[in-house]
Figure 1 (cartoon, rainbow, N blue to C red):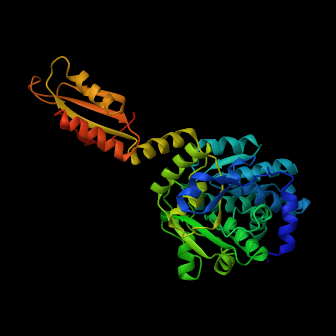
Figure 2: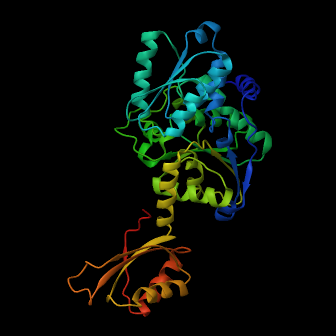
Figure 3: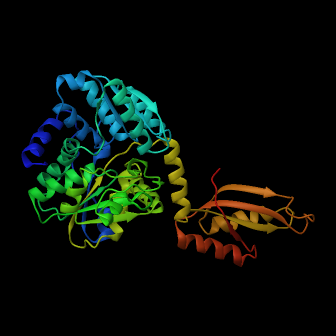
Length: 404
């Protein structure tokens, strides 16, 4: 059972290893929603995610004998670092099984805390099944990332901090993977103030909690294919489901494209790096009718490798028409390239890349192709640049934009 006494105990225990993640008021998101929107930046924890809370509290409840056997868990990355860090603090060994697609930054940081890392399977569920086999074979103590009420209790300490700092909070939004975070947060929030609305957010392509609620039991999805790797879970925890049924007011689904936009918003407006799964709560704001309310979005983690970050930024800029490419056909004679560049410059466009192809036609005097990739302020500005090129007679054709 999740009890207020245990939540209070956990809140004191996790302070030994957590950073105080004070709420950050967001002018940008508040203006967008017509509400007062605050961010709970758990991406600023030592391990880059809230998972340290549940892992540390869980390990604190184990006996000396259980710790001495060595710990094992499976994780897409954030729970892995939480267990590794906590195990180091308690002076016990930890083995972590991670999916082979886990971002390198999460693998290396887990190793840096002294844990042994084993890469296995394509998704968390594959890694978890293998971790159970190893636990049985070697007698390790298994620390489940979400299907454990002690772990959920540790995660729920976030709600304690939110309510203490903002007692009049109306909504709390939290990402859902296996359900440990939402279980702890929703249960404690309702204990402290039943009027608080708790909203869970899942990626559309890994909506395992929504499926479980619909079936009234835990079900396994065929796949969990989403860029929100921290929430790519095929089946939620059976211990969590009853609490979600009782205390979560609604669950919203977010497409991967929305996460890309949310990443840009967070970087540009708050100078924060938040991983895709951690952005679910922010991306879901557009679906929430919260005008005039006080809303807290939990940013669950910030462990994102640079390659993924680069890809997300590129796709985000293209999606928002801040980067686009056009193809124009020109006669192969001096001055044509300068004329195109001047037209773009006069319209305040910024050329990023030019590709000049003389072999698009057998008659170069008639036409050579110029592919131009440029930067704009957004969709309206893009249209203005296109109109300027049209007026000059260049007949621009939009093509797929690539920055490489």
